[in-house]
Length: 115
Image 1 (cartoon, rainbow, N blue to C red):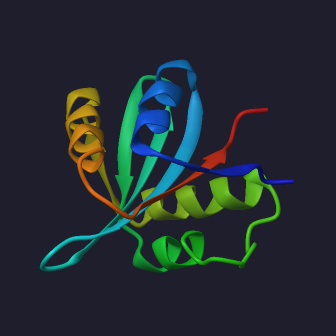
Image 2 (image 1 turned 90 degrees about the horizontal axis):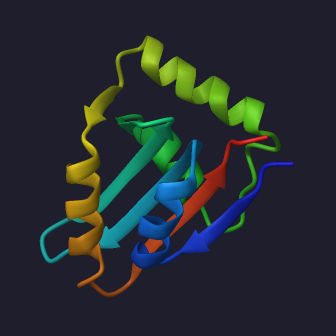
């Protein structure tokens, strides 16, 4: 079963320090656009997955398309194979989370990929 939680930006910042592998789907309505990203952490590396279909699926309210970590990891692997990602620095991730802490209605879903 794929474990998921709804977290605040503060909770994400705390969780990242002890996490070896996980995925965060983040959405927030800004004045001029909707900010939505997928942040994937593997060991000490951070990646932004640029797969719009995956963002949509992961941020759906009641849909559980992925029933196991393996299914979600397969989609992440496909995104990497299709070059739909950017590497991100730990500092960028912290800056982004600090900015999100200042906003209202930030939606963050955490998907645990650790065994």
